[in-house]
Image (cartoon, rainbow, N blue to C red; front, top):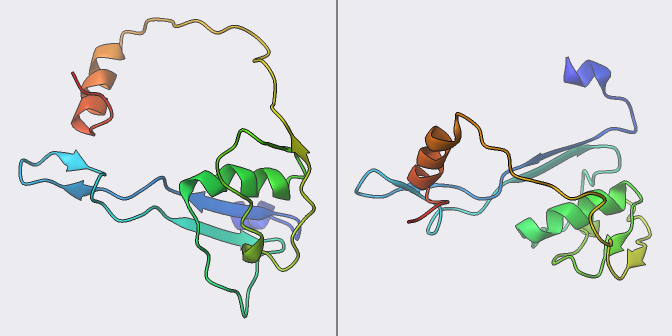
Amino acid sequence: VAAALADGDTLVALVSDHGWSREASGRWNHNDAPPGVLVLAGAGVCESGCPPLDASIYDIAPTLLARLGLPLSDELAGRPLDAAFETPRPVRRVAAYGAPLAASRAVASGADGALREKLEALGYVRE
C-alpha cells in the first residue's frame, strides 16, 4: 500500500537507534550490541557507485532536515549524509531553533507502572 502512495518525490527512511544483545541473565542490553540500521530508498538516493557511509545516529536528523530543505541548527550533533544522495542539497544553518513554542506538563497515566517496568527491563531506566 505504501509503495502505491509513493511518487518520484518520496524518500523512505527506515531507522533504528541500535541493536540489542541478550545478557546471560536474560536481560536485554544495547551497550555491546551491533550498531543501528539506516536504509534510504526513493527520491535522489544514490544507487550505483556510492561511497560507503560513515554514519552515526546523530546524522539522521540533519540528513532528513536537509532533504526537506529545513535549516540545521548549529546545536545539532551530526551532519547530513550527502554521500547517500546523487545530488546533495544546499544546507541552510541557524544558530539555534529557539525556545519551545509552548510549555509542556506531565500527565499521569494508569499505564505508567507497566511502562516503567518495560523500560527498566530494556535498560533505559535504572534505580
